[in-house]
Length: 463
Image 1 (cartoon, rainbow, N blue to C red):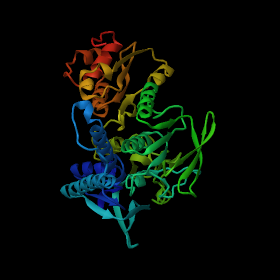
Image 2 (image 1 turned 90 degrees about the horizontal axis):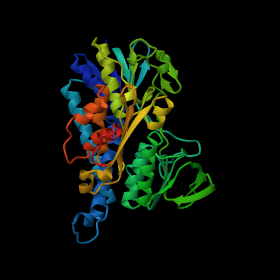
Image 3 (image 1 turned 90 degrees about the vertical axis):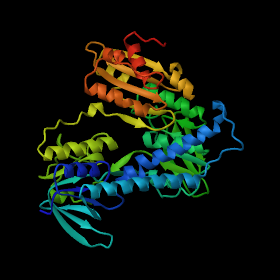
Image 4 (image 1 turned 45 degrees about the vertical axis):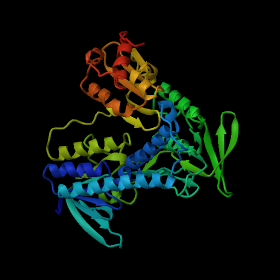
């Protein structure tokens, strides 16, 4: 065997698994056909946050007068510079992964990996040369790509996916964003903030459909207030790209409507990269478009494992990373517990931000729980008022009988940094009373969590 472990794919699942395996004494190689760090680092999580930061700074400048700051002249976005900064951030992070590979003595094999029989990975390089490598164990971490709908075929120019949305040559005057999940909502916010006329189309009755209904309503209010056109319970039927502008036919509750825009951004989800990687030949089973694994990520083929977006579960970077760690620690013979998929935080980096974990209020009721609900608005938060960010709230849900913390749903400034408190508390089975009695610093956004818990138990002070 050439290696103890070969990881195919170097995204947040793959590179984290490789590094943890190396820390545990394994001889490791990573196969990567593109940039180290995968989609998240190069074309997803990291560069999009750089774009969103530029939009946030621009909005601060536009509203500087609200903070007693006078700026001579009018601020304007340099779109090319914004895109360039985003790419530089991604490039810097990718170089960081290269450093970590060398530091941990992990070999990087450039090319496209494909499973063969007998735990062999065949790698085809840029010149078409094929080389075989063997390993005691193999982890598949090949990630996902933008999903295409039959009536919304991406041409990379007028109908685009998230990759093209990050590197457009010029700021479009108008855009239709199809899908209001994290990707769609973040891009809708970004382009709207820079001055693009945005129409956001969502098939479901509410934006960010996986979130609590009250959070969805607040985001819709905020988006509409910012000048965005929001169309829920609506479906894109077709896009005519023949003219200078795309003619987007949208079915709504009231009938059909045609919206014209320079660009149509399709953000209707992702598709797992499971084609062409030799699953059948290696005896790896597929179940509903995903690789079938057990609770420690073993596939139906001996010595072959899978993590991240190609298996069932939330398609999130932090989930893939944790799966990779669990997988290799189990391989190393360590005592590990399976992942608790009921305690995974989700974040959307719009303005206002969204963060949540656990059950929504609706899901808790449908599951038969008698619940206590506490809600604390940002309008009552001293720090939020001082920051000029009074939109949003913290909402918490407890089981009334046993006190279990069932869920938390936050929308507002910095909530993506605050949700970890709830995740840790739920992991430790912390009670609401313990949260109330734990001293939270004032003034902070984070004390809104304590205030919301106090509201659930009838002890809130500042409402």
